[in-house]
Image (tube, rainbow, N blue to C red; front, side, top):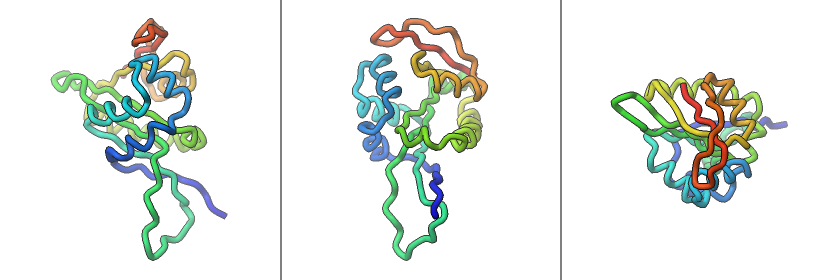
Length: 166
């Protein structure tokens, strides 16, 4: 019997490149509504504009390591933060994920708070926008302690987005 778990580690450019074609539908819709970019291009830009990006990878938590290291699993999510204002200590957090990330359930909650703490050490004030249609993300951001502003038209499609901040 095996148990699927995850590992978090610094992400590489190739991680960003590999995730674009596997994003969950809600993230693809949000990217298009906000920027009009293809998902792969949006991921590359997010990676390049961020000061810190972490990859979330699944692994078999019960297996004994083989003599030869297994290939690195592709990321199921990238989580990053980049500067909005270094003077004011403001950063822009983001998370883009695959459907497999949704399956982590309670583990996502356990993962979220330590990564939030790490981001807040870098940038005490965090803010971004989230597509109002992405209701799971809005609930999760609220649970994390973000203030969620009322939705307003935003992005290239003028769809309702919530500004979230802490």
